[in-house]
Amino acid sequence: MELNQLIEKVSNGVDLTIAESSSAADALASPDVSTDEKKRFLIELSRKGEASDEVAGLANRFRELARDPGLERWKESAIDVCGTGGDKQGTFNISTTVTFILSAAGIPVFKHGNKSITSKCGSANLLEALGVNITAENEILGKSMEELGFCFMFAQSFHPAFKEIMPVRKALAEEGRHSVFNLLGPLINPGVPAYQLIGVYSPKVMGLVADALTKMGLKAGFIAHCDLGPEGGMDEFSVAGLNLMRGVGALSDADDQWMAEDFGLHSGSLSELQGGDVEENLKIFDQLLAGHAPKALEDSVVLNASAALRVLGRHSSIKDGIEESRDLLLGGAVRSKIDQTREFYSSL
Image (cartoon, rainbow, N blue to C red; front, side, top):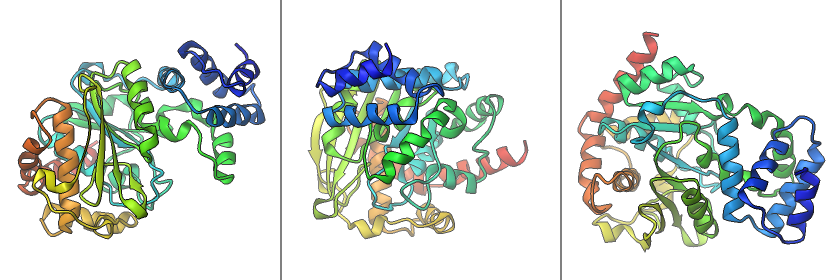
């Protein structure tokens, strides 16, 4: 179906099917469709309100169009921990730190991410500073999984179709408009991990993302958001506010909210979670591993790692995983993993 026909449907308030949304993805990725037409589609889709079939159809197709990293051997036991971004809070790289905790625990991690857009230091920025070759070819990704238990897939290297979409995304951003692309990043991991912990920028999209991931066949996952009250929200769990959680797949019955105190942790302030540029975040990372970081940041990292362990079925509750997560972070396992990572990439 032509994109202009799909525009007419959504402008009339009609939700697209998964198949129609897949066609829309092809049109958005095509150099033969004008930027104006793509922009009109995304605006009308946002105005109508995206449906879970639309998000699932777009995400599935963009994942099919992505470069295949060749990681099938690990995908059924792998997890990704990633946020949508866009919360504009400037916090430290919590999910990237969680990647090292999980890999130190022997869990395969497919980390999918990008360089910073809304903060000074994105996951790719920090990992690159820690020695990771963020544009590594598939052979290196496989070796990284074998030797380190994790790999990083730099979104720009894996989604060539997005080259045709960047002009329209830039145009929408300049107008201050959100689009479905503000949600898609964590949903289009090209390695297709069976498990995910996904943070979202708004509680309003939690159900939408959870339903889309269920339709995409995710084995189990949590959708996370932290409500900071007047200060807005975060696209991950933290001890700085009220945590909202929705389950996916085998955990689809999970629909909960809780504070830090419910897990024996102390509430902290958003200011304690702040990050900076790459150099500053490297210092914070070292402080975390030495147990000298702000307690609220340490506890927020541990909280997200514990949630990921719960997604994987390693513990029967998030609370039960806190001690293991803290031991991995502070006991030398993560420090050792960092050293192994630097050695691995420097020897290539």
